[in-house]
Amino acid sequence: MADLDNILAEARETNDKMQAALGATDESTMRQIVRLRTRFATLVAEMMSAIRTDPRLAANPELKDQFDAKFAEMRQELAKHQHKWRSTEIESDEAGYRMAGREMGHKQDAFYRWAQDALRDA
Image (cartoon, rainbow, N blue to C red; front, side, top):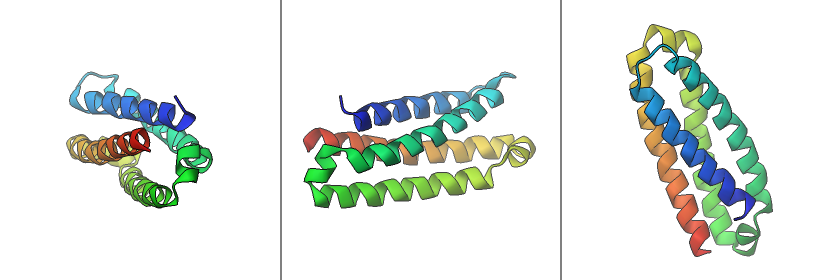
């Protein structure tokens, strides 16, 4: 599996863990969510690098353009989400954060599914 494939798979797995954590209510849940948010930031940086070096994308400029556009859209949505939901906002409206987190998770999952399918077919 190529680097980008591994990163996408881990990002999707991390998103699944985030969705599970958003549904949990025990005391350690919010600490776990913070750790997962940090991991997402690392994965996005790794993904940026892997996209630049992926041979399938380099060989298919049209797919590369689509990938770049969809990735940029997902990154922008994630950045807006994380900017809006800083720790103080999460603490003051945990239910709102959980709902927003689920919505963001659906957007991320849609990107990961599209990306994995597109690369598989490339």
